[in-house]
Image (tube, rainbow, N blue to C red; front, side):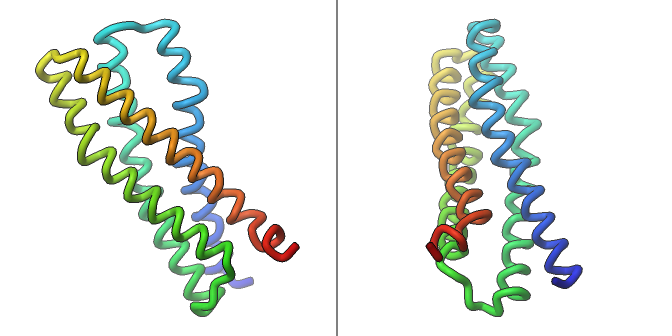
Length: 156
């Protein structure tokens, strides 16, 4: 194993943990706690602040995942990827598109709704973002399993 290969794999895992772990935390711990403690406009404002801090990390993770995955693909596999790698890349493409949609459509509308004190609209955008993040969380967990155990599962 070369240093470049090991570095690419390590960075790939780091970016996966940041993105998927962040989604897991937000959905399983943060959201239920907010529902119990904070209500009304304050919750929408807090969620916007959370997204403003988390989304740059997601962008960095996406860039790192595609760069390290591409490097791994080119260096280690010489363009001949096993099925689980194709599965990971396909799901990663879908996850990336979902995240871009989140940022371009409901996240921007959430900011506009909050700027105009339109709290019902803000709440609706948060619900949509939550559902899309939940979909990406499921896809991310499947991808993590495919990446870590795929060659063993598909060989069985």
